[in-house]
Image (cartoon, one colour):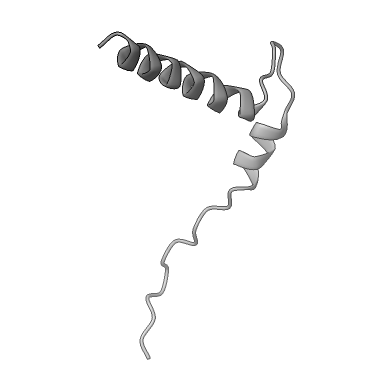
Length: 53
């Protein structure tokens, strides 16, 4: 079995996780709201399109 010597070790994502856990200024939105608002807009658009024909 041959292995490459000196191959770089994959970087850890610990720094990335720490970055996203920090609190920042500004308003925070619940992910359910972010998904539901565009979904409601799409459904309203479909209903208006169906009713206008």
